Image 1 (cartoon, helix red, strand yellow):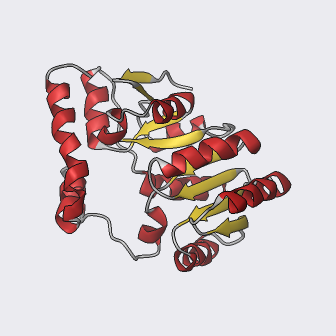
Image 2 (cartoon, rainbow, N blue to C red):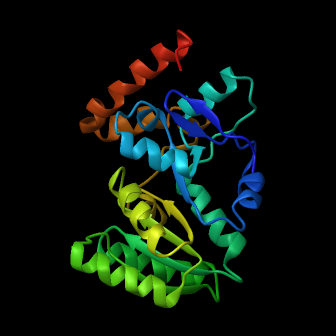
Length: 231
């Protein structure tokens, strides 16, 4: 495992490429958490602790910039792409469980995975609407079926809190995916390549979803702290 680096109150692993990330997690029973500016500046002690106890990786350009300011050659690893790298790398000999989004989306996701990765062993799946009763049933299911990799797509911090609870019941490799199932099914699009190349995916999402403005304001604070060397 490479050394994790503290940015503000959050530890991040400065992976230099996806292959190193894949090699690092081969035998891990941890939660993979996409770290962006919003998570770095979050004021939830609970969320900070979950990130610091697990494997936070640079999913946002701000995180990459902060790591590079510390002299590290880290790269951005989008979770919406990397979860499929994990599937591709492990599907021949690992068991999977998926939870998240609507019933229609999760079913589409599972069906497409079975086409794209013939023979993939998906031991179960469920939508993202998990009440306390469903959560207890899920814990029992995970203990019985013993999936090696569990993908949870609910959005932050809900997915992190759920994964933190589940991993204490069933140790496995967990990964939070936000809206990645919707992207995989073609129901939601990532930014065009030109935006991705110039690290402007955040701007594209803001234009497409103006209601995100309140959340995006944190980027201004983040980059101000970065310029002042206070991260």
